[in-house]
Amino acid sequence: MVCRTRLISSKNFFSILTLHGILEQVINDRTFLNLIPVRPEGAIKNWLLSGKRDVVEERLKTIFLSYHGKRDELIPILQQVQEEFGYLPEQTMLEVARFTGVPESRVYAVTTFYTQFRFTPIGRNHVIVCRGTSCHVRGAPRILEEIEKQLGIKEGETTSDREYSLETVACIGACGLSPCIMINKKVKAKMTPKRVAELFKV
Ligand code: FES
Image (cartoon, rainbow, N blue to C red):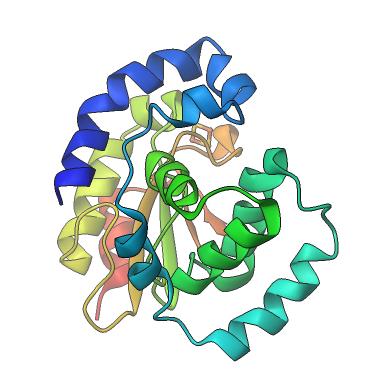
């Protein structure tokens, strides 16, 4: 908890770096990585080792075949692992650390820094609301509000029955159909609060 609080307080600094395109260039620099707050190594190991090792390893092997095990492959590999599993199971980060030679604590630091990475499974229905400019001016905030009301969760959360997960993105890439949302990768165009209510009606 302490670690997360410190990370959040560091986010403005990192956001500025990202804006200037600096962050991606220096992410592999040890000096820079040392700036990211970390957990003690022992805590990291406990945190990473509680997954189902044998099942995970087989799926990871296939992913690793496409890489060379270099430090600068860390983020692409993590992205592919998340694509494969839907989130980052604890054990996968330990295996990725081994494969790339990046210390486990650094893998943890990087994955908690980037909001794109998830540590819990998403729900059976993945709902994404676009918050881009085009959707925003056509009512995206009201769409999001209505979905949150219908599902009883906030952005970034999953319903307790794991039926729905709700996230937002900067642009879905269908601005001509705004305001739009995606459910399980299918775009729902020209949404209104009324349509949302019909869509999620139990
Ligand atoms: S702004 Fe919403 S799809 Fe592009």
